Image 1 (cartoon, rainbow, N blue to C red):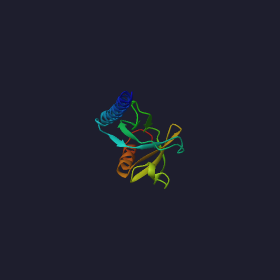
Image 2 (tube, helix red, strand yellow):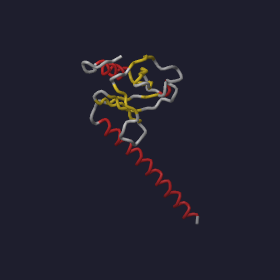
Image 3 (cartoon, helix red, strand yellow):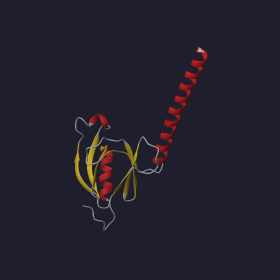
Image 4 (cartoon, rainbow, N blue to C red):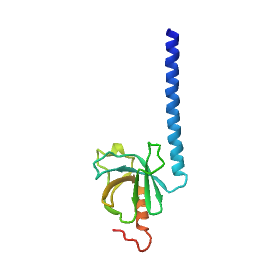
Amino acid sequence: MGGYLALNVGGVLAAVLLAVVAVFAMLSLRRWLLERRGGTVECSLREPDGRGVWRLGIGRYNGDELLWFAIFGFRFRPRRVVHRRGLVVAGRREPAADEEPALQPDTGIVEVRDDGHTVELAMSGAALTGFLAWLEASPPGSSLK
């Protein structure tokens, strides 16, 4: 009986380890597929109105949209879409002391409003500069506020 129990425990541990490796492989494959077209940046997001928790993700520029995908997820559809047209930058700041553990080092935060929804995006300094340049490079005739 003791040998049978040890075999069961070993089999269960092997199955759990295999499941963890499979999940890690699927998350890695998803990230690779999201990043392979380029135009991506690591970007944390907090909503609504800055009261939620910071969620690590990947932002991908797609024309006039910034598509945001949660880093720990299996969906290939973005969780949030930020449209450049009608986007308002409400503020820019450095992380507060209580936010720093949840964010990457050298992070800047920008608060944006899109169709009445407010979100905060946290990106590295270089990525934030790229985001602001993308925002300013809107097509002629579009009205950025």
